[in-house]
Length: 327
Image (cartoon, rainbow, N blue to C red; front, side, top):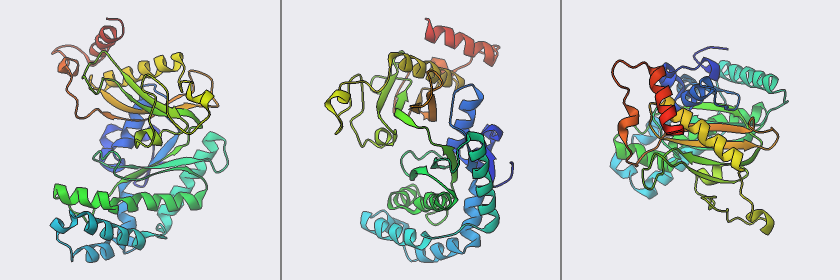
């Protein structure tokens, strides 16, 4: 199915970034270079924009926000009260009929592809500009009713207090901001976490750093648990499990191998990646990546980002792979 409302990962290209957002594009690109990602599709920014206009929500929110000066929204108290009021306004919103129909049809197709009735999915924001941790993610969403509810909830997080304050701080329009939403099959995660293809402390490109925990990875991404960092996770679990690493040595090697391929694909720019290890698949088919984005706030050697004049991209990537992996 291809439309201005739904795009499957297989159909998403880099040029679609303003249609489906960066997260959707990055997943599609990872899949294209042979890195395993969960099956899924993206609901476009156009679907968000149309819903806000056709339900009248956009106009009601604009009128409500007219009484606030942007400077006032930088106040934590004001952004919280404003955001909470708008979230209540959006609660229970139903999608326009054609958008709901296409969303449900795509979900039915995903159920067919995976062979799972009411397949559990994650519902995640995908904006044209990366805002790590700013918008909400919903996990283990099952069935059409829950899916519609969580899509609207993802859009509503655009008006969460932290998001309102962020746009006010950057001088962006507070009342109008649209995001895409990606709907992907949940990985039955045995363990999950994040991987940096550069040491984020030292900037050393010869080191990769993996942080992980048992179960779903949101706890690591959102810093809700102390992750494995060359050690064990501290969680209220059995003493026996506290002493067991959440990754095998083979899984560590496979994660780093695939992450370096992604880094090379992105021109040698170090990547910040989310990963998950499926409990119900054999190695190496159990290794999934859920997101990638450039590492921020770290200085590194930029020679890997520059392709020499006269050298093809294919040769450049091959040279980098040889230098990085066996040099």
